[in-house]
Amino acid sequence: MNKNAPRILRTRPFSPQDLDPDALKTLRRLRELGFTAYLVGGGVRDLLLGRRPKDFDISTDARPEELHELFRNCRIIGRRFRLAHMLFAGGKIIEVATFRAAPPQQGKAGALILDDNAFGTPESDAFRRDFTVNGLFYDAAQNAVIDYVGGLEDLEKRLLRTIGAPKVRFGEDPVRILRGVKFAARLGLNIDPDCLAAMKSERWRLRDAAIPRLLEELLRMMLGGGAARSLTLMQDLGILDLLMPEVAAFMDAASESDRAQLMDLASALDARYEGQRETQTAVAWAVLFWPLYRNILTTLPRPPSIDELRQIAHLLVAAAARRLAIPKRDISTLVSILEGQVRYDPARPGKRSRIGRHPSFASLLDFSELRFEAHQISERKIEGWRQLRGDGGRKKRGRFRR
Ligand code: ATP
Ligand code: MG
Image 1 (cartoon, rainbow, N blue to C red):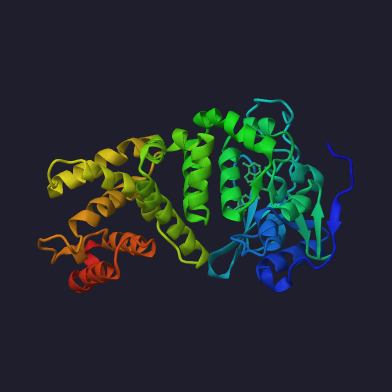
Image 2 (image 1 turned 90 degrees about the vertical axis):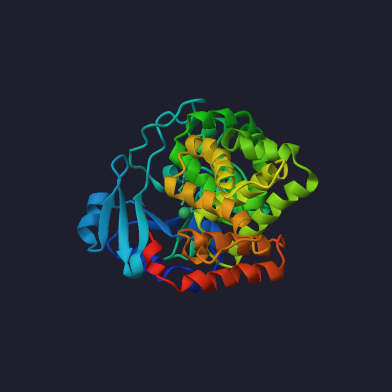
């Protein structure tokens, strides 16, 4: 373990207004009670980068039982590693974790970490984190950033690097490879060459990773502001081929303009994130599948029937649905979005008086809006889509809601 003193940045690194008042309150209370408590992880990183943090996590030397006893708004969660959730108005949750020890096998390549339960010091807690930029502490009382792992320097250099040897850290938890893609893409960081090489060479380990975590990281890439860059990076590293081989094959074989269509949709998702507009998961899936779907339709000898439109969409997404255990509800919305783009296209002849009643109509329209934002459909056409909402939307709206 590193015996060097941490680097401490004392200049006002960001304004206190940027901090969440409830997180500040919790930090102050813990201090008043005689504990050490820091803001940690992604919140500190994002503040230093001038970004709006998604959440504020706290690490402390108070034990979960103590937190439970001392804070009325505290719930203890987790079986394997117990964490405290501090509950605030509006459903806000501040996560408070006790400093953890380094996992026992740390340092042995290929050892998957199954037990990381022991409590530790701030230093050990910093070193068990994944990337240097995620290993910073912020001490609100001193208004100082405490850096045991070299994260400040890497942030200045805009460099993503694992804490410790990348092969070892990816062996302990291969999902860190996807997290690396996500952070590099979302934050526009360069990846350290050794780290990048290990992301590629260790990617096969993702086959052993827990599927819900893969699904979650993939969605965070798509919906967390780094969709376009994540796709390119995963394709370059051979990771997309493991997670979404159909999309990887498409990107490989597609014409320049087909590939641009996928990338423009992904960029439109990123623009929504920057504009603080939320998008549902089914629409993110549609970004990945729509260019493939459209491509298949162009190869058909005659225009498909409505049944065929649906069947083709089902067949296209079935393998990914199984591979990543995508929830049934998302799949059914996704299929409706795909077939609906064609079936209800305002330029296509046919009756559509009942379309506003379609259970997935809002998602369908939202994906059309995204295509409009990606300059893939005209202003006139999107107006046509919006008018469809006007028709059926008035009639018995609630009935088809889930
Ligand atoms: P986001 O903005 O996407 O939430 P984050 O950095 O806050 O990013 P979280 O998944 O919320 O990421 O995790 C919070 C912190 O916990 C991270 O910043 C990191 O320090 C640590 N962490 C999370 N997952 C891992 C992991 N697999 N291995 C090691 N440390 C991790
Ligand atoms: Mg977070």
